[in-house]
Amino acid sequence: MPRSHFKFNPDNLKYDAMDNSPGARIWRVVVYVAAVLVIAILLNVVYSLFFDTPRERQIRRENELLLEQYQALSERKSRVDTVMQEVRRIDKDIYRVIFETEPLQSQMHADRLQEYRELLLQPDEEIVSFTALKLDSMIARNDHTASYYDLLMIRGEKKAAMLPNIPAIQPIENKDLTLIASGFGYRIHPIYKIRKMHTGIDFSAPVGTPVFAAGNGTVEVAVRSGRGMGNRILIDHGFGYKSLYAYMDEIRVRPGMEVKRGQVIGTVGDTGLSVAPHLHYEVHLDGEPVNPINYFFLEISPLQYEQLIHISIKSGQSFD
Image 1 (cartoon, rainbow, N blue to C red):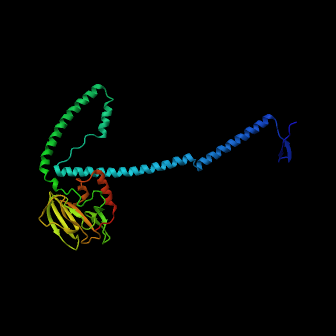
Image 2 (cartoon, one colour):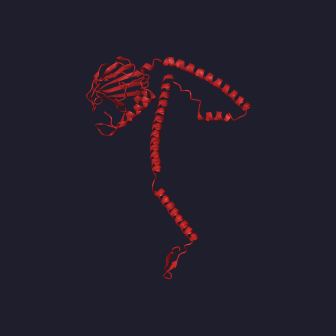
Image 3 (cartoon, rainbow, N blue to C red):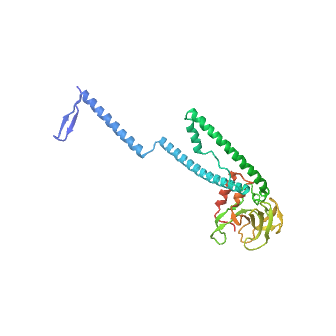
């Protein structure tokens, strides 16, 4: 005889016999399983809301790493874009200086590429008509370009004498680009401790390091002094260019002397208001100081130019 099961009834304070039929037992099992499933689902939802699975933690770490890499690449791209814009600007400036004319503008733009993509969807007769017009335009443009370069050849021959005079090399040996201590721009003065325009760049080097003329020219000033910029040399390169070398030790030239690019004109020193051995170097164009780094085009590549820009802006204090 099957066992009877009783359940206390709080309403009448008695034990009532429970239905123990097979159907009732199955129903109780179904209810129990359903309750367990609901609780399991709820626990899983709560856990997923407040806790990460090992796979989710791994994906989160990978996403964070990718984000860091993306940010680093974005910063790198921004620096490269800035450098390339500066390189293009310098290239155009040099072009204007040498040839006294504006460079030809590139004709290949994104809108032109899109124009050709759309053309491929047109009927054949449209393509033929468009191609004929383009050929006529190219012939006219080629004639213009040929005349333009003929003019450049004439001006280039006249300007050939100017190229050796441009102060286009670094004034001391600095192939590994490690000697630039302070760049062009506003810097903290080492003695007065105020923000002041630094009109040149400082090369940190031992006393006695050879100093070279950056271009052909005539020595305009060669003085020895214990004050201000110390022992210094000013070279007039003609064509509006001058270069200044300050805080030197030895001076091996005299006013009126002709010098050639790469010629040793003196040595690095620690004179005047200098706080450490270095060479202060400036380039002037039409009486105004310009960033000398922009004129090192005979020695450095665009990548090295980027490195020089980065190095020159690191220091917040000049040496003079």
